[in-house]
Amino acid sequence: MDGGRHSPGRGIGFAVVAFALFATHDAIIKGLGAGYSVFQIIFFAMLFSFVAAAILVLADSSTGNFRPRHPWLILARSLLSVTGMSAAFFAFVSLPLAEVYALLFATPLLITALSVPLLGETVRAQRWAAVVVGLIGVIIVLRPGATALSPGHVSALVAALASALSAIIIRKIGGEERSAVMILYPMLASLAVMGAVLPFVYVPVELPALGLMAGVGLLSVAAQLGTIAAYRFAPAAVIAPMQYSQILWATLYGIVFFSERPDAMVAAGAAVIIASGLFIVWRESRANVSQRTPVLRSANPRYDAGPSPKPRLLRRRDRG
Image 1 (cartoon, rainbow, N blue to C red):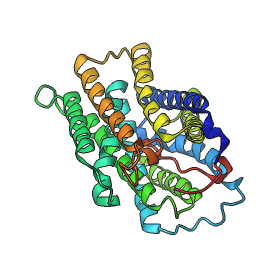
Image 2: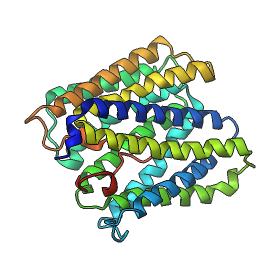
Image 3: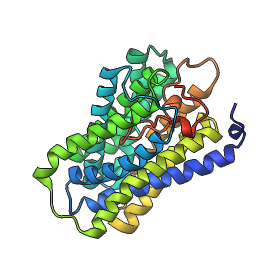
Image 4: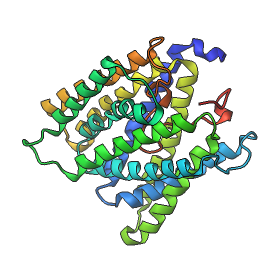
């Protein structure tokens, strides 16, 4: 056992910093979206993050070859990564940051629901009730009938669903597939798809904006490394709830940089969704409740790369 697992304080510290970096990453995306297409932002951000991630993976002598053992599931995860990232970037550009986060926080609820048909997980009445309550929170945020359902809202929900499906795939093949394969293929798919779209949306990039796009990519890698470190030092049940701290940063950034103030309905819906997610994490952390614990074992269910597989150079083992 890794002795670092006896340092939950360090794990929480890494998690708080990592999720603050993720929120900063998303705020920069929103700022860039005022002048550039989300496809152009993704292309340059992924280009810089790909270089950093490739260096880390290639530095791992245990990586071996990059041939996937589950090519169709790796392809599916790659397409889900492209879809989720594009949808989330569009949502951040279109909606207030806190409102997007409230909808993205439905991801653990979707993971729980989808784990039944796709993983064979047994979900009992209490967790099903949490899923239903959390979806009611989503409805509170969306306010059907009171406000129009915008493309930004749809995009945020698509990103949450894509992230949940990506998490399910990781849980299904994570114990057999090499981490390098699960990291690099989605990145290559994102670069290929965005590169194909880029000629149709490209506008000249000024140097400060290019620096911010590079910052998006590097912040993504740094935040992923932070979450990996957090899960090494503390149990998943301690780290998983820390992801909800992102909405505090999103609210702050929204107020300071974008003159956004989440209204009472968004705050109420977010509170319901977060409470439901925390309950699911708590239930999965209890002994004899769940065999697979799909939410806890999915690390950080982010839209951009799904849950982060952990390269061996950053872990003691390469197990799911």
